[in-house]
Length: 265
Ligand SMILES: Nc1ncnc2c1ncn2[C@@H]1O[C@H](COP(=O)(O)OP(=O)(O)OP(=O)(O)O)[C@@H](O)[C@H]1O
Image (cartoon, rainbow, N blue to C red; front, side, top):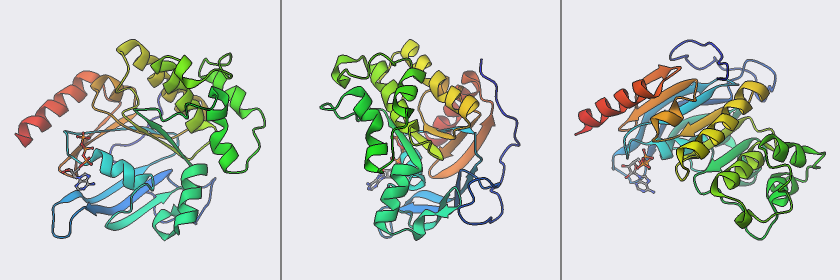
C-alpha cells in the first residue's frame, strides 16, 4: 500500500497568498464561494462552495447522481465558468484569465483523465502523450518515453491506441495528463469503463503520481473502491459539501453514499 500524507479534516483554504508563487504555501486548487446555476432563476447545481486542495493531495469527489460532481470538476478545471465565486489553480485566479490564457493554463498547468480516454486514434501512443508538449511548444526532453515507461508501456510508443486494451489506453491517458507536470490532474470516472483488476492498476498509477512525484489529483468517481485510493473523499449532495472522510475505506464510503441516497429519497 502506498503511503499517505497526514492532514487535518476539512482543512480550510490557505489565506490569500502571492500570485503565481509556485514554491510557496499556495494550494494546488482553491474554490471560494463557487456557485453554478445553469438557468436564470433555476436551482443552483453548486451552492456556494469552498474547497482547498493542498499540493500532493489525492481527493475523491463523490455524491449521488445530480449532486454536482461534474459541475464542480468543470468549474475547477476551467472548462466551465462559475456563476459566482473564484477558482485558483496554484496562485492564479482563473476567472481573471481571457480565453486564450485560460486555454494555455488548461494545456500547461492542468491534466485531464476522462472515462473515455480521448486519445487521438490517428496518432501513435507516443505522439498522443507528446501532444500537450507539442501544442505548448515545449521540447520533449525524454519526458514522453519516461512517462510511457512509468505507466508500463515503454515498448508500445509506436502502436496506435486501437491496438491497446482499454486499461492500457487509460494508462496512456495518464501519461499524457502528467507529461506537462501539471499542478492539478482532474480525473472524471477514470475507471468507470474498466474491470476491477484493470481499474486497480490505473488507480495505483494515480496514487503513485501523488506519492512519488507530488502530483495533486482530483477524481470524480461513483465507485467506493476507487475512492478508497484517495487521501480524502468529499461527498456532495444537492451542490453542497455533505461530509468528508479522511483516509476513506470503501466500506465507509459505501455507508456514506447509502445514507446520502436515503436522505435524497
Ligand atoms: N448543461 C446543463 N444544463 C442544465 N442543467 C445542468 C447541466 N449540467 C448539469 N445540470 C444540472 O446540474 C445538476 C448537477 O449536475 P452534475 O452533472 O454536475 O451532477 P453529477 O453529480 O456529476 O451527476 P452524475 O453522477 O449523474 O454524473 C443536475 O441537476 C443537472 O441536471
